[in-house]
Image (cartoon, rainbow, N blue to C red; front, side, top):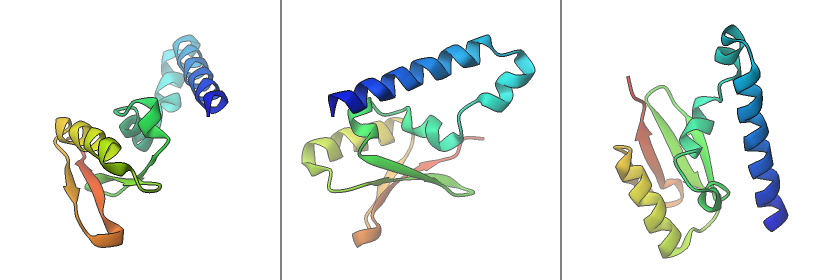
Length: 101
């Protein structure tokens, strides 16, 4: 798990460096996809547990597997900070973050 965290951190840093070095017209094309932006709301240890799907109206954040009460509370608090909510729907339960704009 530590190796995975280190690799993820290095990848993020390299992407930031590449973005900073790119000309302005290229930067717009290199920006992360919206789903990636949404994942950046969460700390690394939670990001690994979540997946994001994009719909026309919202970002749907679903756990990859059972979060447990502590991680669920952390995710719910972050979602709430970003004007999102939890949708209880059995196996289809998810967090919903509205798209801004």
